[in-house]
Length: 59
Image (tube, rainbow, N blue to C red; front, side, top):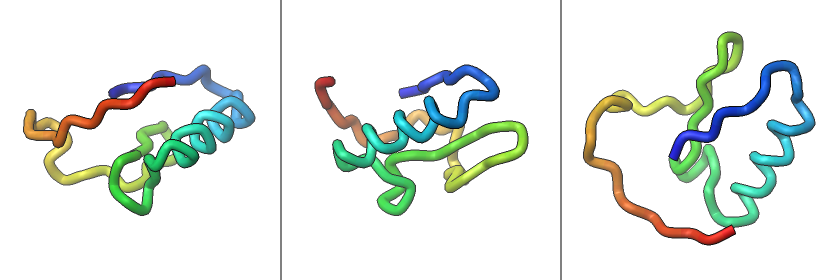
């Protein structure tokens, strides 16, 4: 899943990260990555491969 966030709103980014973490999706377990111009975190080497493990969740 790709979540696009507005530029320059760190509070929104933090809130989304907290929500994802509360649902078990974290940087530590490899379920979350970040790609921003100045902040890239835990990007998998195979980012373009179509072999992800499906995960279902409901908000």
